[in-house]
Image (cartoon, rainbow, N blue to C red; front, side, top):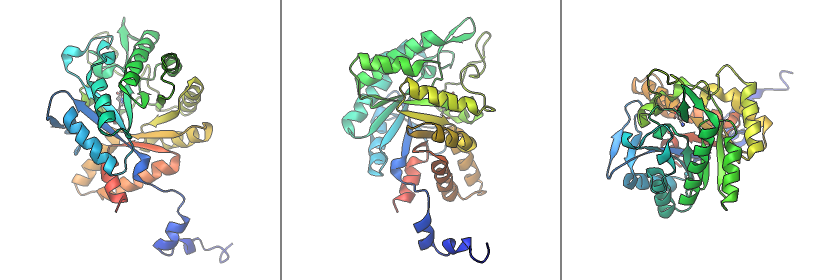
Length: 330
Ligand code: PBG
């Protein structure tokens, strides 16, 4: 068709490029994942995640206010509790005065409009570092779902806007939805980690929470009996469709960058918003390469976030949320 079509015409300058741009990115696309620690005035650096800290509740509130002022409307909360509170069943997970429940209340109190999405999984409370209950060397599904349901209810009672099950047990979305309804929490939503793959990209996160599976006899060494095989695509779509049927309001694909084919396919298959988690290892890779001067940090950060959006994400959970918001607000 040349010269009738010269595609470079629409790339001539930034004005025309901005007019024809198909995807936009802004701070309200982001959720900020936060690690909460016990104690007061605690700020512990996570070596494999430069710029990210485990904050005690007082400092967490400061950070939530900062995030809100930058235009970020949602936070994902993960807690690190002391070893003395861990067991196999995760009973601390539904303690109404536990660290998570206190955190939810404190954030809703300080910044009521901030959407608070606590993580629902047993790993921060498990002596074995698994997302559920172990019996005879196996992670047992249905008893774990009961525990996750109690945990979700306690989050709702503390004031959570959404609960975010990240455990990959079968049937947990339906069980949680039913329990929320039966207890009058009709407006508490579920963001389900639907297509969550067993990924080495989670390494730095497990450093942050000290939550890696323990190396011990008769304890599964990895999470492959519940998180998905990264070789699988159709299974990811099936998981997302099932979670929507079970009552999920938002479905998530995780990790991000290496899984954008799944993001697009899930986006085309479901009619609910799709969230993507740009996980700890993805963050660490950019930080490490930038520290060596091998990549331009800010450009890579913004490019990746745009590409996640382009692939079909309505919401991106990212450790870059604040840094990216500063750039996008300029
Ligand atoms: C555990 C959980 C993990 C992440 C979020 N929730 C780790 C895992 O599944 O082992 C990882 C997030 C990240 O790497 O940033 N329920």
